Image (cartoon, rainbow, N blue to C red; front, side):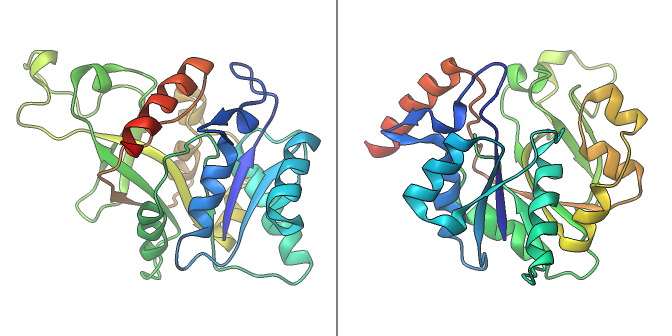
Length: 252
C-alpha cells in the first residue's frame, strides 16, 4: 500500500497540501499516482489536520484518509501509525510505500520500480536515485547525494558531494564520474517499517539530519533503483510557482 503523509502546519509553507497546482490541491497528485500504479492495492493520506482530512474524504471517500497523531517527527513515523491501525483491524500489506505528498510529479513507473525491488526476498527497504547533471545541483546541501555498492544497495547518504574527487577542481567533478541525487520516496516491508519506527535517533542522522542514516547505522540494507525522472518537490510558495510552470510545459 501507499501512505502519503500530509501535514498542514509546514513552517515554510503553511497549508501546502491543499495549495492549488493546476487547479487541484497538491496532495491530490500523489494520491492519484498511487491509485494508478499496478501492484499498489490501497492508498491513504495520513494527516493530523481536519482540513486535509475533510478534503480527502469529500473528494475521494472515507477510505482515502486517516487521522494520525500530531506528535510524529517524520513521515515514516506517520506511516508506521497507519500500518499499526490497519493491522489492528485485520488489514495486512506486505510492503508500505512512504510517498511524499509535496512531490506532485511523481510517476507511476517510479512506484512500480520500488515495488519490484521486493521481488528479492532479502530487500527490506527500497528507494530511488537520479543522475546529477549540474555542478550547482551537486554542491547544494538541499540535494541529498547517495553512493551505492556494486549490488545497488546504499553505502551512504550525505548533503555533501560524495564521492570526493581528490586533486580535481570542483567544477570538473562531473567529468568522468557519476553522481546521484536521492529521490526521497521509500518502501518498506511491513515488519521492517514497524522496526525502524522504534529506533532511536542515531549519531550520523543527528549530524546530517537524514533519517535513512539511522536505518543504515542499525544494519538495514537499502536497495536503490535509478530513475530518469527528477521529481520537483514543493517546500515554499516559490517552489509552487515553479511547479506551475513545469505543469504548463507538460501540457504543451
